[in-house]
Amino acid sequence: MFSYQSNSLFIFLHLIFLLACNQSQVPKIEGIISGKTTILADESLFTIVDDEAEIFALNYKQAQIKFNYRPEQQLLKLFLSDSIKTAIMARDLTPKEKQHFLAQKIVIRTNRFAIEGIAFIVNKASTDSVITLQQLKNALQGKYKNNKAWVFDNAQSSTVAYLMQFSGVKNFANNVYALQSNKEVIKYVSTHPQAVGVVSLSWLVRPTPEIENELKNIKLLALSGDGKKYHKPTQSSLKTGKYPLTRNLYIHNCQGSAGLGTGFASFLAGEMGQRIVLKAGLAPDSLPTRQVNFK
Image 1 (cartoon, one colour):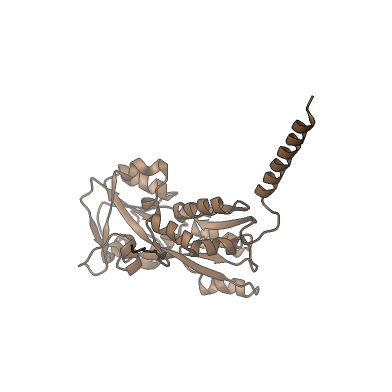
Image 2 (cartoon, rainbow, N blue to C red):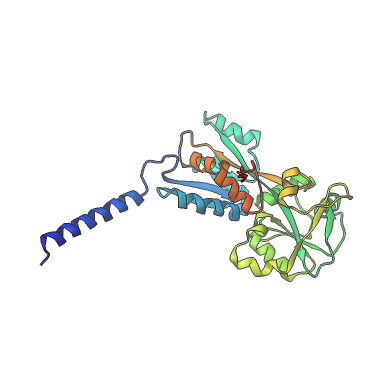
């Protein structure tokens, strides 16, 4: 049988356990750093968003965010249907998209948190190393005759939309193909010397484990807007705009009240979130401050 002392110790430890469980439980009422919510995210931005989400979760135990990754066109359908109130995208909302929310008297809070680039990759066996914007436009319009196969991540992706607008076409040339994801593009280019892959830079600087070996068989093309100076997508060339095909990353919050969407947006814009962008190889919206101690 338990003694009085051992029984008291058991009760004490049981209370501590219950208290710890209660502290780790996610509250039902959503707040800035607590509760549950779902955030839409452009699937081409998976690696940078996943990095940010992991550190946010480590710091805010009572917050539980589910990230729903979709190609841009699918993401927009869900966002505009008001089923999910927060979205991370590789562009700002258009005036028409903004009007959709304003007509319902919904306040839109938009924050830019990073700058990234559209990257062009080829197999290491390829002799290509540079390309001009005019050559790129001609290739997408079908005016640049060669035996190259151009491969994109997804027909509904933000990357496709970006380059359709850039090239001024509604349909790409016959030698331009859409796969299913950035991972598939990287894997394809790693085994096809005549292919040119179009991917989000974030997949190259922070790759997932299953494509690390494939990255050893590809190389980046340098781009030029004037045919004279060529630049690869680096943090410096993204921030200064010297790399010609950059895009801003935004979080759009239409919750209407202070919820987890607001909290995550603040985290992205804050020093910790910006340091994660910097570490991930993209250009942060604002450079984190550094303290220098003189002795």
